[in-house]
Image 1 (cartoon, rainbow, N blue to C red):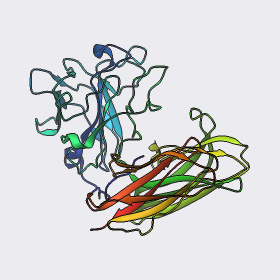
Image 2 (image 1 turned 120 degrees about the horizontal axis):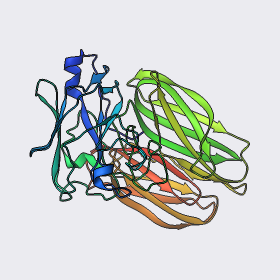
Image 3 (image 1 turned 120 degrees about the vertical axis):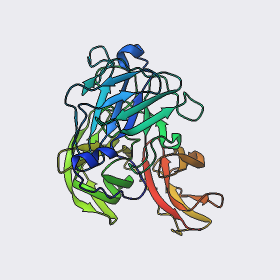
Length: 374
């Protein structure tokens, strides 16, 4: 689940028209756990409301690589499909593939991934350059983190994967989210703009905000003490489909002292799900953490907020764009326990828009939105 730009209105189109909206959303051209010949893959995303079958479609580049898909590969509405050079999870680095192709390779330098429908019409193209403008990871995928309406052939909308998502199996180290909406991807039905955990008198208050929702059944709140194994705490119903901002709260009490990590499992009506980034607190009966709302908000050219920590610790406060790019570090140092630190965000050189300020310490993390209007 990711922070994204304004809602994309998806129309219910017939199969032939819906196919025009299929897009390439993730590329692993240079795995580290296995050889390229065993571990290359790419992912496609269907942002429409109709399933798309890739049988008869062609995968190719601008040189001689070309492969016609010879089996039914259904990409569900709002879902993903993973196409691999090697479909064996035991030898491909630990991922489940929807289709194994041949006669098509992903160069570690410049190359193209082109999708053509059975009529020969080019539906999507991603032409990466091997590192000049595009990400050039080793052991991580390239991830499209724009909206379906954005140009996914623009390197500005691609980033390097930073996490190994649960769709990978085994003990490998390659990073990516094959077949799922990873934490860096924004082509999602729910636009999460804030998620935080605050602690007050021993009770953790989880709160999150969505800018819009599409077919959102709700959120399963999950908890972990090691950031590895998560257990469900409860379910909060969503608002289905809405373009209005929604705010949610979920209190958690009775937790023992120590580290507590939380995430949201956002579930669609069709069972499709995606995970939010994690937030965490350390339960310390001696104090609480607090990240205040910015004031003024909206603002121009500056705004302020405060950070209070329960124990003396190192804290980083940074500002991010809605595409997840860090645009400024506002604070990087040690805060004393229970001493509010006022942070000023000067944005005179930034364009108008919604930004996210995030405070991260050793015992907490929280994010809030702020709007710059010029």
